[in-house]
Image (cartoon, rainbow, N blue to C red; front, side):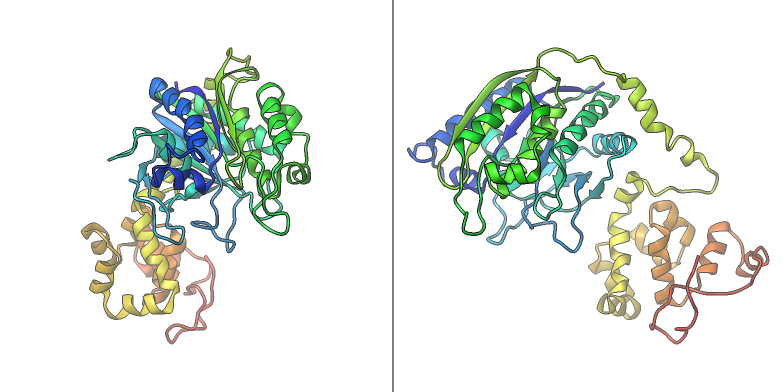
Length: 428
């Protein structure tokens, strides 16, 4: 089973990245930041974790307000450095751990946390700013990473109580992972700061010290505070410290603090903390029981004859093809597909296997591969194939034979104005 080695709380201000990239370790202004991170770097070197479960917020870089999630879990094979406007930092991408991410997702959903999921999104300074301070990264990073993006920019944001509860569930999910992994849980953001409005530049060291004391010794007291309380005491943007409660919830009720630092170089009170579990807490549910409960919802679904549930594995494998076919909803890309298919395939970076499925419109092969049906029907609408032809092909029947199994023999596809049959209707 996987084990939680400990927890790290860290500020993730871009000034940390600036100090690293401009080699300010010996500058009296920036030296306290390097000094505060040095013990964290040594602790990680000593513990040698396999995976960091990293809690952060994106700064309107890879996530935008057309679809803004409360909790978004990443499960990609790797995560690149995001471009925040001035070009990405010269850092290598960091590898993910999709298997652990999938397992954690099942565990959190079983505990009724509603998640969204992401692939192929870059990570901004919320992740790479502190990581570049505490891990060697000349050619590659020495650990894998499972990121959890928390939507703390657009109100309403999750409550402190909700974050702490998610951490408690996260602990069970990690500990029930069947492989032998060492995991460190990282909570990032904060401490006190405000960067917007006339209150920009606000800091509150007294509150920062109180928060750090409670985080270690009485985190549940912090769950009683409202988001307005956090904003009043630590700044509107400083309310993001609720993400530290996810990390703290993933540890035992009593912890050993092995390191803490604090400095205020400019706009953001910058801190680092390292905790280790003091003693194993008495859990109401064993890791084995938690695993069984998480697996209960989907046990046997993959064995349903002729069924191909759209799992993380299929989503990951067919991501490129699903993304390419999703482009059909854009008139320009639809036109390229219809009038220059081979060139369109090449521009989409498709493999020969994927190209062949499209050349032959092998609907069953595509759904088995991982193309979700609701993408298939977009393809069908573009090429003038009714939905019933897809159903028949997936069943290995002719269209006429399939229609004989229906109460009403109609043909339709998703509604639209493309093509001459714009009145075909819609439905499944």
